[in-house]
Length: 394
Ligand code: PLP
Image 1 (tube, rainbow, N blue to C red):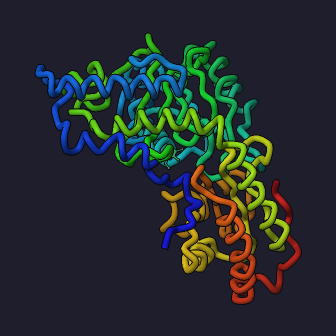
Image 2: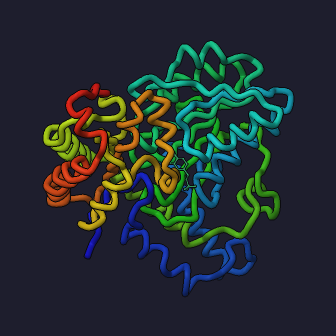
């Protein structure tokens, strides 16, 4: 049975067109792109073509793209590169709602000789810009902020921040893993120095990512080794996946024009129907400043994990908090930073759609979820006591 897959911020289906483009590079064309012979050289040409497609999606130059293994590697590479290239500066600015790929590294750096400012967010998940700018100084080595939040979809004003940060000589990095393919990105006219992305969030396979490094940005490689990626990331290329990422970038550019209004309408239909039909439910995050595909909804006095298990019986896939934090019963750090009450944060479910979702799937979730919440609440020791008392966030 085909899953009703609404967990696309965790990972996406590899597009059939992407698979088709990749397949010959597993079997027929297995040459090393660095080889002198034509057999390998042809593979190198195909990588060049893929690089061009990805650069086009970002409005960047092909030589500004460094392929990596994932978003996490891109984030680590960017942050370490900025710190190693500016050894006299020991201050970092990031936010309280970053993905663990940035958050955990910054916490590590904070314990190991750097000073890190974790900028707070408001109840809508929007960044406290006054706090950010008050802490930005000429000692700031890097400002690393996500473009769009993986849990709520809330978008940060990266370009405005980049302009302010550049005026202080800081390197600007953005974790755009959730933004690429969902928002138009124009790096040619931007002040962003480095941008991370990940293939598996935009219908390319897992195990490939990229880091955009603006021409002229001081850089130190994270993986030191061979000459690949102009010496910026050693290791023989993940050829088929890089080619898949190129195709996925081309598809993403087309889908932005043809599919995004439909996906947004599906998301809005799902969200408004659930909020209307389920009492004590509330949206997490700024409704007017978020990704088109994401909605995070809190159902008070129930456990998110229990909701997921019961939805699983109908093969409905969503997420409680971020995929990376599920498995722990701690409420999500993002929702906590937004001040979402404990009883709501625990019962928050993220639905993240893609171009492959249909209206029938939305209707099925709208039909199945309200009775699930009702059943769970009947079992909840808190529900009877607190029903009808919640505050609405967003
Ligand atoms: N940054 C954000 C915002 C993400 O959502 C994710 C994955 O969920 C990552 C980084 C990590 O990407 P990857 O899984 O490719 O390492």
